[in-house]
Image (cartoon, rainbow, N blue to C red):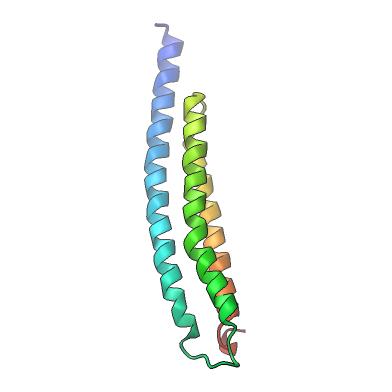
Length: 120
């Protein structure tokens, strides 16, 4: 085995280890987003039938709770495909963590938009 092949395999192994650790971090983030989605129900606590849009609150809850799961699955598939091709894959979960955070914030903002008028 040549020195270049050995170095390439070591680099691939390090990239895969980093990707696995970041996938675990992303999975923890998905659990946090699910918890946040459940807590978003409290946006409607001070609502009556005319001050809140419960459809918007529910939409924000679903975006915050369900979309990160789908993004984690996409991240997992993308990471595996790049790993099988011996391409660097450590950055894939990192990118999807950022996308997940942005989507979760959008979901939270949608839920707040449907809440009482004090958030406007």
